[in-house]
Length: 297
Image (cartoon, rainbow, N blue to C red; front, top):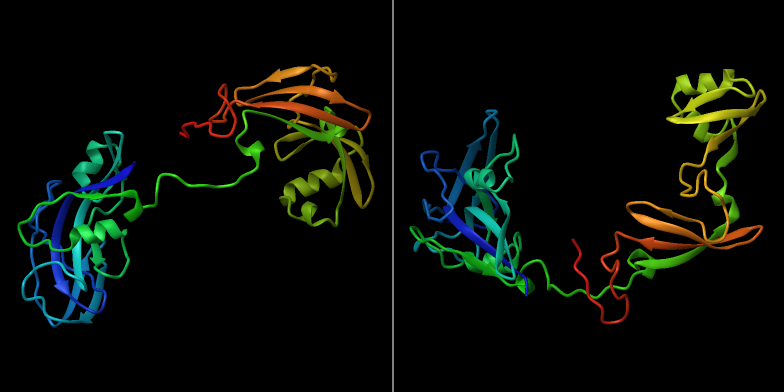
């Protein structure tokens, strides 16, 4: 079973409160990935602020019961540095952290991101249940790793979901109108259409001034003007979405692409049946039947 492993818990500050506050970070303490309680504050009421690198101050006030024993409990407000690892068959991969050094070591560092302690109000369901339970009972000087099972983290590994087979099948057929195989598409656009009015002004002007037989750039697509009136224009564009563009349209014709293969299986005057091989399916070149399993990347 896949588990969430949270290591490197550094408890920066602790107080008991009924309101959510922003606690001060000890600027003289460098966070480590091993985890250490830095300070414990005892108060019945407070007004606190933190100042970020831009000089903006965040201020919050609150009140609550005095934390006399310095131990994390229900209602405590704690600030923690953390490193989140996913334990999958013995492989532990760092997925998230608010410790700058750890982020850099694991190619997770983001320029401009603030690597600050995470404030957590115990009992507020602010974080996953397993993480919150692991914080309970921590105190100054303690170092700790928290293992969060799937059922107390982001859910169990196994999820049952019903989807259309075509979304995941390695091979399937579809029936469409034959016109999807045409190399060109002919369409008429009136100048009062919302679609026409949504085009950039310069393109609208080009379309209105175009003449029959002229080629125009229609937002990256070359279009040939077939007919134009004072109120509309009929143009023809290459059907770039057609995998059989420029190919002979007959039963057995096959086109291969990196993502999928297409073959004309049946062809009538009005319709076409295509056999599609989905190379991106997790079941590609595998059995696709009830009970079959595959790894989703």
